[in-house]
Image (cartoon, rainbow over all chains, first blue to last red; front, side, top):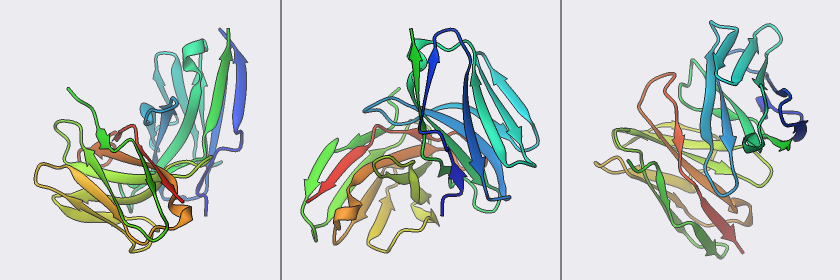
Length: 113
Length: 113
């Protein structure tokens, strides 16, 4: 039962343009969401998070948007850089489990120079 | 400051055997979580340890067990290995509490033949 879904396995974007990565979830108990970035042969590294009391969180080039009614979140990267090429995972945490992250299947982003 | 470390990096085992994977958390962290990442999938939560006790458990059989030591390091044990246990096993450390970022190690690649 995949409670967090990333329906785009891959995405290619030109350097300098915007990258938009999407994530959908089914569990209404999820109230904390994170994006992780993973390079080959490395563990996932934390990128940005958002609590369900917000609908937007920004950190430099990275912005996460949360639409609770649609159970959808997205990660915007502007401007995209070649070093952003990696696999991006969306993760969610529920108030009744706490710290048990549910991950999506990932989206492989390629930024073309 | 060393981040999360895991050993070994790679491991090859035969069906029916037992395996032990090890994790040292990031300095200052008291909580260790283990995840299984199958090829093409996102990390899936196995369990979490805090104060040497299993605090949370995902949907994994009892063949998967763990331990946390007084220095916060942790082991993951898998008995009666199946071919389907072949995966990347990730350890993540954090401080207990909602909203605390989990830092991941590079993982142990387990191959069961």
